[in-house]
Structure formats: structure tokens, C-alpha cells
Length: 127
Length: 384
Image (cartoon, rainbow over all chains, first blue to last red; front, side):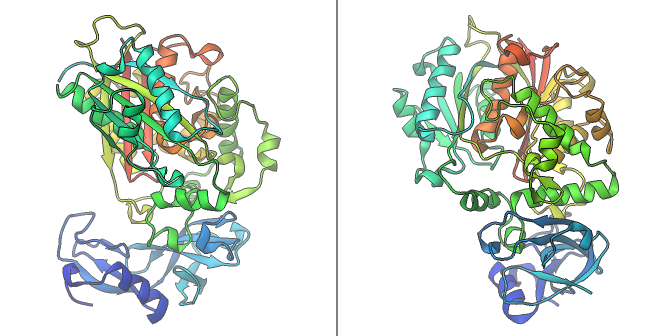
């Protein structure tokens, strides 16, 4: 916690955070807007008083699509589910769940959490 | 503001081009200028779009195009706004002409991707999204629209055949369009037998990777004394933006940039959705056509699916949507798409749309989205 966005983490810090440190870094505005996306001002209210925060990585799947035709970094992971996760503390983040071939296996509302791994991107597993 | 017209329009057949985007761009540009009854020397400025020029190791297409047209001294620049690149070029042309900074402007979009393999093309398309925060977390371009479909269907349930009906309708229109990539109808059986690409999307929910080139000439009414075709009067030219990351937006069942562009465009034109005779909307995936119809105010949220199933949006329906076949079946050569939508309006309003002609052509709307809605263009036209 703490620190203004100007002095806050970079995109490289975000990637290193989930890759090497098991941290999901983000920004929280006093207006309530919370995001992992790198910004210098709040996309909702324009405010610059953003807190540099660690996100819990725990929440509920609110959108999901099973990918069968990947882009290059996920060539060896298909099929998998690309998910949007609504965090308990507010805000949404994206990531993927390995080994999902049928969307019925990961219905909306499923509880998931961030699972640090050596694989690309932010990986989630079911609670 | 000066009254601004579209006075010439041309496109090649979408699909697979043997020639480069550069060559195709020059050919359609000259055809559009000829059709306008003008010469290249009349052009004051060129806006060209070629978002994936890197696929051909070529940037800075504007001066190459103008040189090929015999007007190397005319200023040009490349406009990039993902899938809405050339409609962004049209907006810049409108600003120049309506504002009195130019009398005649050439707007061209061209793309060639067919020489790439699917993996490379999929990776290129994904660059329109947020690379570190979406793509690197597993999103593909179909995957992003598929998550919208996932959230939308959770909030507003659709029978599975509804998305199929969008594809079947647009293929039926494209079957009558000599410019279209896929000039064939598809059956529900064909749709259901196609593989899942990104659930719930099957192959036939997705637009193809197409090559293609399209051009229009935008000119001031007072400059074009005797138009050689029926001109399109630009009644509204609106561009909007929004948060790129879909998951950071307030909801996942529509595109905020489309909603705002629709509102602003109808206000600028002094029209309502009921007064639009036909439209070309950005149906890169089947769900996108339903979202567009709702975002633009043609149907309440959750109602566009039933209207599609009832045939209202068919070519002979109450509100023809994508009579060209849309991105879905006419094809989606990314940078050509926005201008190609206007070429369709031009042909419909000039009575040269042949077998795919719609009944009423006094007013039309075009809607073109950049990637997943980080940018959006809406144009409204009246027959001049």
C-alpha cells in the first residue's frame, strides 16, 4: 500500500510481480475505482491520488470463454478458459484457467484465486 | 461548417489479393476519383489506413499512394485506429472539408494479411487489445468478444440459434455482393458443424481475415459543382473513445464508445433511430451486431436477438442491417472496413447495389469499432 501513481509501479513491475513474486499489483482511486491496468490518473474520475496496492487475486468469474485458437504465447495451453474475475475488494482483473475444454466446467459465479506459476500471464485456479 | 459530401467510392473484392496493399490502395483510389468526376490533381489531402502494414514490411503508405496517383506533392498521413482506422480517416477528412481546410480529400483503407499463417494473423489481431493486461493473460481477439457474449447471455439469455441467425442473414446478403469475401449462403447445419474457436463462438460466428482495399472521395458541396453520381451528404461524423480494457468498464454487455457515438451522431444529424432506412454495423463477431443495434438505440437492451430471429434486420425486413454481408461475410480487411461500409451506402443510394438493394435509401448509418471498443466511429448519411 501507499505511494502515488507517479512514484508507483511500472508495467514491468506488474509483470515481475505476478511472475516472480506472487503479487498482483494494481491501483485504487479514492472514488472506488480499482484496476490492475497501468494508469497515471483514474479512468473513471480523472483523479490523480491513486494508491499503489496489492490486489487480493480472489474473486468470482463474471465472464469466461474457452479458447481453442490461441495467440502465440498460449500455443501450448489450449484449450483453456480466458476469464474476467470480479475481485472481492472491487475492480476486475483478467487471467486464464488451465485445462478447461467445456465452458460448463467453469460456470459464471465460480470462485477462483490467483495461482502464481511459470506459465505466461495471470493464472487462476478454482478455490 | 460547410456541407460535406461523399462524391466517389470504390472497393475491390475482399478475400485474397495477389497484389500488395499498396497496389490495391492505388487502384481503388483512382477508381473512386474517376467515379467522382474529379482528377487526382483535385485532391488536397490524403488519409490512408493500413494498420498491419508491418505484415508487408511497409509503413508511410500515404506518399507512396500519392506518388502512384501522380500527385506526390499532396500531403498525406496514415491513420491508425485498429479496425476503425479508415472511418477515423473519414472523420479527419470531414473535419478538413467541413472546416474549410480542404476542398477534396481522399480516404483509403487497405490491408493484406492472407500471406500470414493463422497463428501470426491471430497474434497481429490481438495487438488491438491491451497487450500486458488482456492479451498476455490469454485473450485472443475472438476471446474478448466471446467474454462479452458470455456476460451478455448471462444477463439477457439468448437461445443458441440467435447468434447463428446473425451469421446466416449476413452470409445471405454477402451471397448477392460481388465485393464480398464469402459469396455463399450458409445453413444452420453448416453453422452448428463448424468448430468452436472461442466459446460460445464457432468459426461461423467470426469474421474472416480478409485482404481488401476501399476508397472514397470527400468533398465540399460548393467545390463539386456537377456531381457525376448521387452524393451522400454527411449528416453526422462522430468519433468516441473508451477504456480499452473491457473488464475495467462499468458493464460487459455493450460498448460504451458505441453508445456515446450513437447519441452524439443522432443529435448532430437531428434524426432518431426510427428515421434511419438501413445500416452497416461492426459485426466482427455475431454478438457484436446485436450489441451494436442496442448500443445505437435501435432496440432496447436484450431485444436485438428476438428482432433478428423475427427477420426485422434481414435485407427485406423493416430495418436492413449489413446488406453488404457485414464484416462477418463481406469480410474484414481491418483498415478497409470503415470506408467499405460507406462504399456500400454509396452503392445503395446510387441504385447500383444490384440484387442486394434495400427498399428505402434516403438515410443510412455506418458504425465502425476499433478493436473491442476503445475507439468508435458513427456516420449518418442522407441521399443528396
